[in-house]
Length: 296
Ligand SMILES: [Zn+2]
Image 1 (spheres, rainbow, N blue to C red):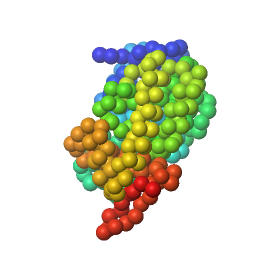
Image 2 (cartoon, rainbow, N blue to C red):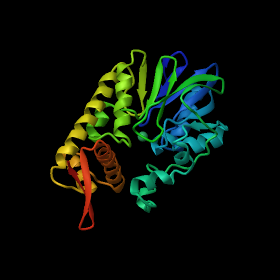
Image 3 (cartoon, rainbow, N blue to C red):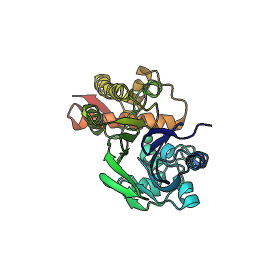
Image 4 (cartoon, rainbow, N blue to C red):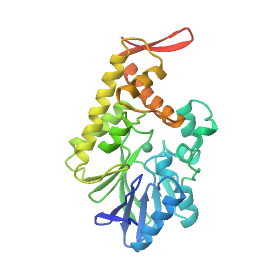
């Protein structure tokens, strides 16, 4: 079984469907994200134990279930306090808001599965940008906006646990369109990281850490710009949000096979529609009871 991988003095990660970060000082450890569920959280506890580490606190990069699903279990099992950003807090404490934001109303039962509805978790405190000392471990909280409302990264020495600020190129190839809520913020975040000499080693939530991160981040930034252009061109003929999403799926060869995936793609498409609308590049009008987007 794969255990913790050491990246730098006091910085480790546990590879998996969602990579989990660990910042340690002496025997005390801060986990960055918890994985999807109790199984994954138990795995993290075992990996910490094998390394002689003890969980002292948890920081969540954001409130998506694959990153926070194990948080409530870890908190109840170990007493470790859980921290996140101000904007993510309501979603961590009331995860049904995640499903509501995707669906646009109270989510039906088939959207209330563990991939979209994590167990609620009490948040001990909110972390702003900058240095933080938790359980005797020094880390730095870095705002990395775009993927969710208050997404953060956590720096430990030369390592930045970067959550879902970008996804690996193999994951990007499968997803086609990166999931974003704020397109301009996501692009600015990636531009900032790419321009930074001191960015260090990035550990993405999904994909391989290491020196290849710049290529991954660049591929995500290129894809964001390309999708924005593509949506604008699609709207030479007026489309509803659903039609625009369907056309994007076709363009990137994404097979939508489940309601959850449908709503994630629709939500990502809407982020691009909002961005283009706010830039004054597209407009919207209501015709025959449908809201249609069109190029200006
Ligand atoms: Zn996410």
